[in-house]
Image (cartoon, rainbow, N blue to C red; front, side, top):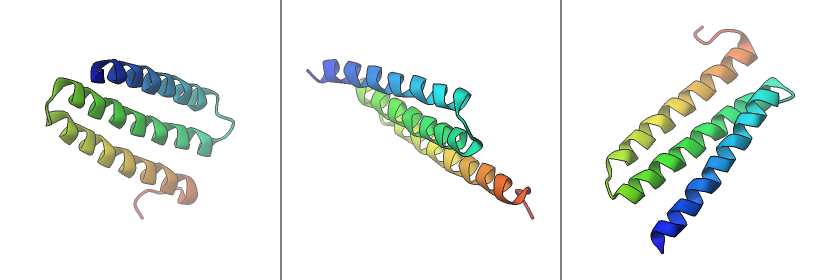
Length: 89
């Protein structure tokens, strides 16, 4: 039963990634595109964790943590660049 649920969740997260990609490409403003990219990071983390659960290993959890860290730092850097024009002052 768990394998069936994992496949269903894989499909749902894949659909969420496609919808985020659509918002990233078509987004009416730059903040919408940044938010879509940040949401794509979160969905990618969910996919990696779900894959780690299906494989039964904890190695993928560390990769998900690394992607979460990079996603947060890149979102902050892009927002700071949009607000001030410089990343490092």
